[in-house]
Length: 149
Image 1 (tube, rainbow, N blue to C red):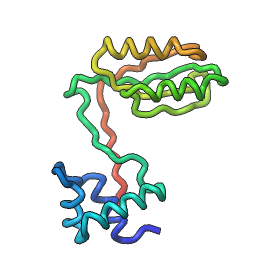
Image 2 (cartoon, one colour):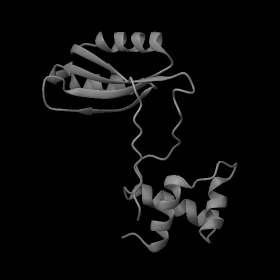
Image 3 (cartoon, rainbow, N blue to C red):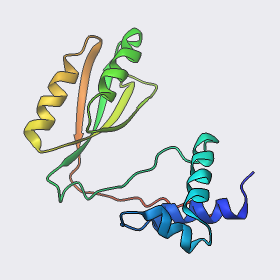
Image 4 (cartoon, rainbow, N blue to C red):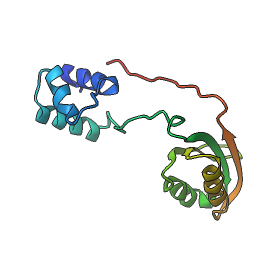
């Protein structure tokens, strides 16, 4: 069960984490608590499954990266191994299994077209990969998701 403090904390970390050397200390002040208590609650909320990922989002294009959505057709017996291999690439943000011919989808941020082609070539050559579709971004649509608690 979330406390009122937990709800305030979860709302704050979605948008209001300061870019400072001790962001949790500043956030703790804003929430009328101390840094230790705040960090303890964040750990507990993570362990309870309320937080899955905690990190920054960057304007990847400004850094020279290009995004793509990739669909793979993978032999069912090879799916776990291919998914694990795909996850080892640092530019893969997530992958997921789907039903249908193309049964493994993932997103990739690569530092330019040459790097993207190289990575996708390596992935296409993995045992069990039967086909690959590179669905490069032409226009960026940013969906902002914020859960108001």
